[in-house]
Length: 93
Image (tube, rainbow, N blue to C red; front, side, top):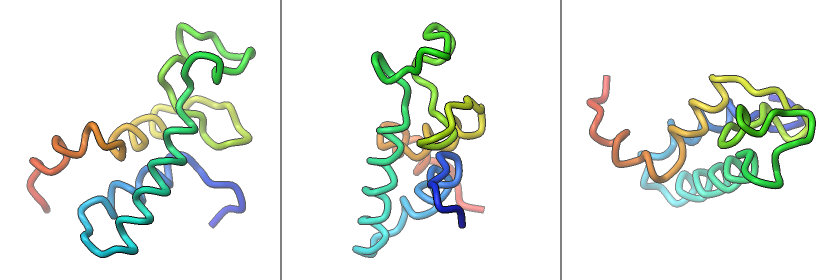
């Protein structure tokens, strides 16, 4: 565990817990999704060091690192509510 939350790891945890019906799982998913929503680079939240045409909609690696990584964005997007119906249609392995 790191002292600073990581976007990709949080997204992965939310993906794993999203199917849970227990109250603690639903609470953890809500907290994780709120964190991910804050990490998405939109409008004025895009740091000046990043090209807005490339960074818009991406997710920073962590609250203190503006690195853009495809794994962080992929896990974050899969954890967001709009994609949950797509995730539910996938068969469990």
